[in-house]
Length: 386
Image 1 (cartoon, rainbow, N blue to C red):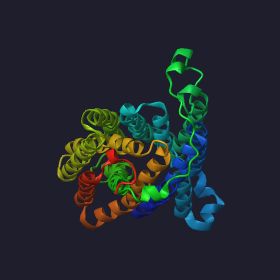
Image 2: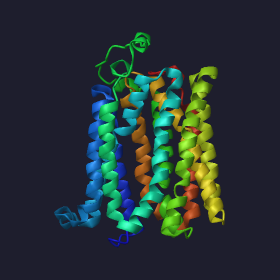
Image 3: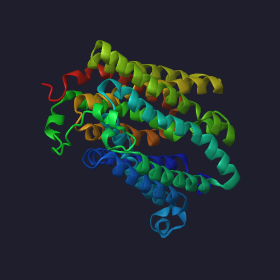
């Protein structure tokens, strides 16, 4: 922002451009994972978004910036980055569906998405330190190299199904139940006639709105509003993501246990609603307390409870349709990123108009509404509910 003289509102547009690309390609990304398998699809996606990450650091000096301006060029490259990253979570869900039994999928996707918390917790302090010592473009180049390295590792170590993996021995192969590959068309009409799917999408849109407040603005909130310097802000900005790392697998484990003991619908709804409502309460408190450290603590617990509910959402898509888990989870995550498209731009506007307590209060209310919507979500009935 200081390098190019960008305002909060312009930075919000750049954040939102990423989310638009990310939202538009959720369903195609999930369909590709269902159709071609997670090994090749996620490898190509990693390479694509790593190139776009590096290009972020250099786009202002290209002819593209001369055509559409620096802000426009950043918006275009971040849109392209979103297109690549859109494949990730639906592909994760496809892999969890292929590799784990039904009573472990909430925990499985909780661990996978909990990785977002790990990466996001590490990034602010490391990025701030690299930025202070070597300049902000270096952060993007290092992230790009990391992505390319992960693409190579994923290609070498992953397989679409357990029985395809060379590390699976003969005894393990004998225990595996191989399911025939399905190439059936996506049942869009059936999806459209299943109310649970639409309530799931709307509720997850609420989660997406709140998640992108953290992903886009939390670090800047600590530095610009709560008065932390760049390095301390980077350190404390990792706190919500540490909470995500812990709470996301925990919520996945809880929803699996509840589903086993009390049925799918109760198990998913109790975990999903609990996480969303408690997240809203914690965020509302964090927005109004005077102490910066109490604010960080409360807002961090808000992020943790938000991600506590994630396993219930993603496992519900597999409960509804195992054969189309990638596509259906992509549809659900499109909802999250509709909310995420609004959030990065609306959040600073609300803060400029009425202050950050109001802006965070709106996010809290959105989370609570998303939790209440779990009363309408019934994955136990499956598809085509009448």
